[in-house]
Length: 505
Image (cartoon, rainbow, N blue to C red; front, side):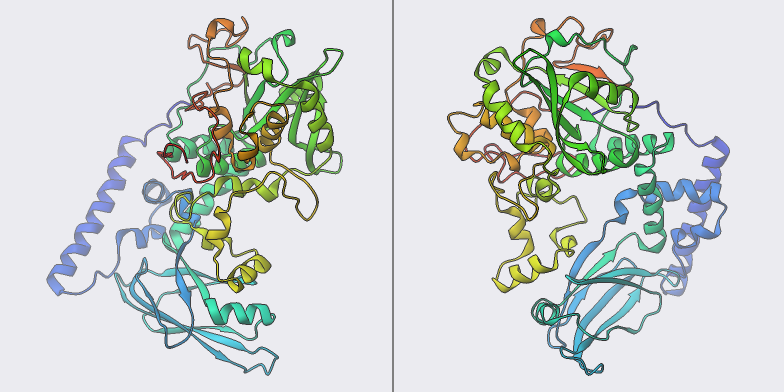
């Protein structure tokens, strides 16, 4: 991954004012509470919107961040005989139950969700909720201690009716509340903007949530690459830090632990011409597909047209591994995949290997309630969505629009076809690999004296791979450390920020 200079501290006067206001409000509330024996009339952060922005914003930044946009699943409300109870962020005592009715006189009727909230910790707080079935998502907020209702006039279909009857309506709490959620939206939005603000936001997020160390490299930040030193099978790791792909990669890195967000691979044809094969190349129709491009065309795009500020590293194969690389088989596989879609279908399955060891808090498998047919069928079979996600993805699965692969699965399936996973290839499903899993394979050069002379040119820190573009020094923790083994990466947790991986998972 690729650290900018530290953000300037708040001016001393502002720092003093902010902390003085917060301390004063806190002490005042505690005194009122102790003297009167009542709940505090407000919490300091409840009235932050009323304060000047230069006072409130530093406090909000300390209290909330982008991850506060993620909801927490509190449970599913079903029949009145089976109350759901939980503690909210504002109201500490809450109950919910579902009452079926047919006020609409429709085929499957509808229902009323009852939510009774009480025991608020202050007079000014509120709880914000999201309610979902596989077929709909809605939201509401509660400010008063009483029983509230949410009407579902009629179920969309028999499938929704049967699902709700057996599984209930899922309830998600936005633990940061209205203010914190809005602040989180403000933090998430710039991740996807193609601006300096967006780039700094991505860097800040990755430093805070992953411990990345974006250290500025000495110039030149673009290497004068000699393509004669690049060989078939050499791996290209890319880290994009601004714009649409920068924001997407930031979230992908966070949940998987990978310090790169995209990948490609080098090939040479029978005449010795260098090519780059990748899944995720945008075609003329704006679709992300699998493509094989001449090196000069690919490299020129990354230098002049890719506005996501890509940081790029070349990971040369070890000579012994290169000797095993079957170029004919690699080309045969690559040609069979040209034009096929990027594997959005399987990218999530490479990440989810366990019931509860891959979701960064507060999310869990219940956030995936946007797959109605799958959820209904899974429930019908007596299983659950979280169990479904952990089933090892098979490399030969065909999706509704045909064969597809993510960027890293494309490369590793090529490696598999080219013999690099022999003799255990049949027991390795590379669709289960993340980019981190790929660059952790012990496939790459481990002798720095054999790296090209231009590798890391001008940098006083000699990386074990060749960074060829980027202002910040890329880091790939765990690089080139793991021998392949049967059923590799099929049951691996990936919780940030440690991303602990048990041996043999």
